[in-house]
Length: 270
Image (cartoon, one colour):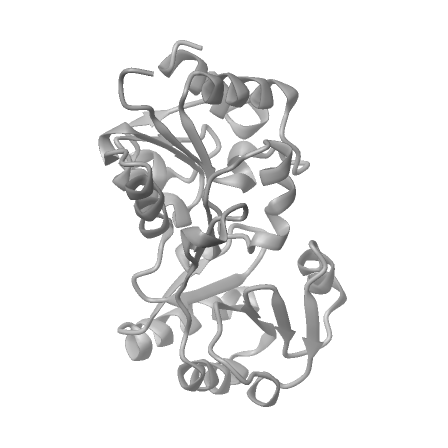
């Protein structure tokens, strides 16, 4: 390929994946064509690696991957590439747990790469987080955690979510970034401040010497904002939140209508 290839960054849930969490045959076909044309395809997700690796393998990728919204970036097929793991200090984590307990929470969990620590036993959440068979520990996080963590999730009642987020912004703005999950989950996700998908994507782009102007990034939620702003072509899915559509340079069809493939086919003349 004579011109610089494009780096294509794919969010998973609500973007590449259909609502039943699969990649459609058509999307797969277009992604294969893009790679055959010399473009570089990577995944940038809020998920841990263990629950995104099946899609990585299904697409037969050989690129680094952004997990935990940028807090963990590594190359599954090349250990020499380096591992970028940015953690939350245990001391801060314990302070947040203390305060969250007073806010009528359903549960809290901490993740350290592929180890998952639950504050309380929770069948519903266990089910979601058991994908990729992590090591699961259940019990008071203040006692079970012995090291800095990749991310914390607080599952609260709907009317407490904003109160907890206000506390996080007032007290821990210097050290944490937090986001709210999409409905129906009233979950707050907390990672180290300054971490987002764009930070991880920049590492990958630098590795391939691809300028931001040649990045096409797809997303649907608020954890995709920085990535879409960073990319030369920030593409919001048809099902994306309004805030993302406002900052995106382009919009495509929904995740149920092969929006990613539809956009790539036309943008890259595949």
